[in-house]
Image (tube, rainbow, N blue to C red; front, side):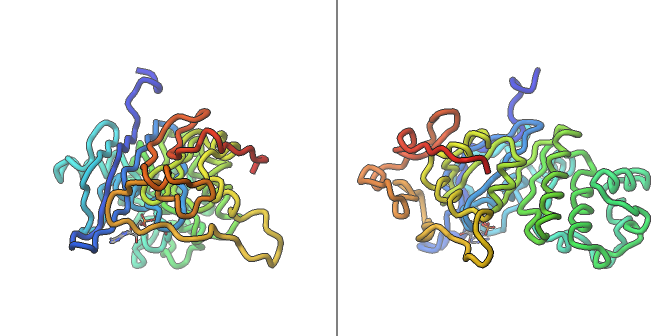
Length: 325
Ligand SMILES: Nc1ncnc2c1ncn2[C@@H]1O[C@H](COP(=O)(O)OP(=O)(O)OP(=O)(O)O)[C@@H](O)[C@H]1O
């Protein structure tokens, strides 16, 4: 089977996740999210805070908080329905197929154990530890091995966490804001490292990020999330050069990078809705300059528009042309 005919590594179909079940206090974090990732693909998942990125990332390993429920939809990793697996199969999937990297590397590392020992628990042999630490771009490896986590810089610690996440050769790596605690130069290096793993290991990567310009530079595909749904989805080169959803256009318009020194960063006026249940209309309508009665009455489904999918009733009319990021 060639890559194109194999089932996707990650297949999320109309996934709904809600937190809490007290009447009137349910929060719907995913409202029918759909996307897929193939082997060797780097998918960027972007959207404002609260759009559901982390919920989707955690759902991949069924790592959601105890108050989460799945009223509908499906999530498959390598063809296996993650929410249907028994405990043993789920453990096996997490161990052998998945790797996770989170925002703050210090939370992932045990502060009381030397780095070499921690990586060895994931990697097995001492030789494998050294190979992994070299692969994630660390130098002076013996010193790193002997160090405790607090003796490493933030960038070094995140490289160690990535080394542990790839130790068993995961097919799919989920990285949730992996550069949020790092400065700009290190961010670029960590993005480049994650993308290089795809090249070296054919790993599929889901990269959750607020940094649109970095996602545009490093990702093959992009999924733009709003109010728990994927509202625009397709090749990063298409979505960023010719955004079709008014929300993608608004996100790009306020993305940091072009402001002058001292200028306050812009944000999209208004706030995303807090959903108690299924949104029956366009959830972006209240913040959208193009919304009409149709948008306020009917939920837009994802449909193909000029080389990507868009959930907007007006998408075909609104495609913008942007300069390169
Ligand atoms: N355990 C929980 N209990 C209740 N609500 C939750 C829980 N976890 C997440 N949520 C809510 O679900 C929504 C989606 O959150 P999520 O963390 O997935 O968004 P996000 O896009 O990753 O945001 P950020 O970029 O800030 O991390 C938010 O409104 C959040 O408050």
